Image (cartoon, rainbow over all chains, first blue to last red; front, top):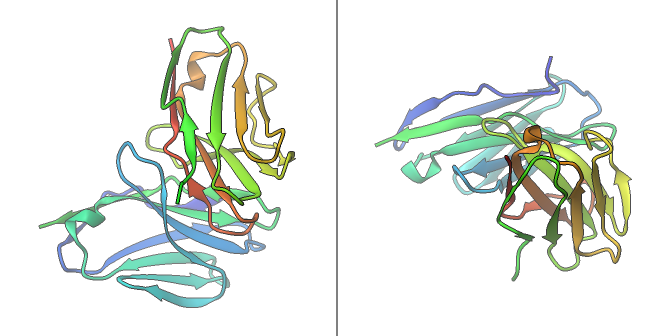
Length: 110
Length: 113
């Protein structure tokens, strides 16, 4: 089992719909959770971070954390073609080591 | 303000050669990280500096890889006797502290022929 798992996709969502991206992690001691967006050929760009159970909203983005079930998700409302990218989940585990998932490719179709 | 910068943006070298990759973090960020990213994969952690010291170098694949940050700002990743398998994009990131969000530089694409 990978320490941080994401569905590689591609996930295809129509423009204007909600895109839902999921990530599971294995280390129950994990403390910090991040979502990064990465366009092809570019470096990762921070979208959201969340430390506590529950939801955190920022504009069209909502991060959801459930430590009991060991998953973190990212919702993108009113999806736009510019949201098409790879989304990386990153987790700082109990040993203070940051681990990235392999990413989910998201495609927003007009 | 200035973000994380990395030089060179591209480096092509021959198998067996030595290379140095440079990272200049965001001013005031005490934490600095090096990652390696291969196509279709997420960034793979290599080493983390807190200030001048390497707080965690457990991700360095072998003793051909070494990194320094002598004054607690700019860092250099050094790779000796490069191998074709070292070809990847090397990313640097900085943050205010270990548990804070990290900001990435544009990366150095290393190609070992």
